[in-house]
Length: 152
Image 1 (cartoon, rainbow, N blue to C red):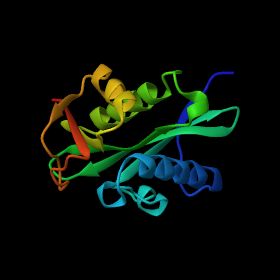
Image 2 (cartoon, rainbow, N blue to C red):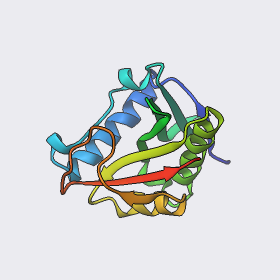
Image 3 (cartoon, rainbow, N blue to C red):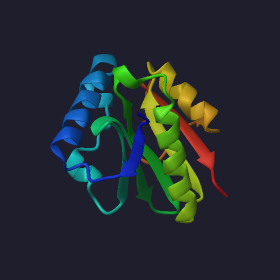
Image 4 (tube, one colour):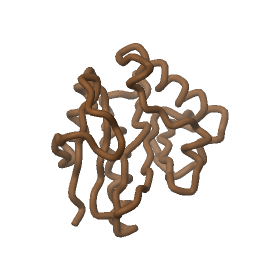
């Protein structure tokens, strides 16, 4: 029973529940004013592609590519349920995000993550991302860690 990953709309009840779980997990580690969540409605926008990981039909992970000007893509809403961690689901989703970004001709991927998310750092660093200063319009904050990867 392998986990399957596909592009899906986030406007499904089970995906809404998964994103709500992600938001709760982030708020346990980061003050709300330093959490930069996209709502599921924002995730459903034409500038964003959402990948959902499913195990036997159950949504167990997610991640998204949000497109910005100047051929920049942003990795957003990365999450794997605790029950499915350690199965490389996050790495697979990051790989799908990167493949789509390359296919669309984007030249750079960036992301913001929390300062208390070492497991996330590992996923991004193994995928070839390097730490950098603040990206896009995120403020420089002790609560944030920024990454980038050139696709050129």
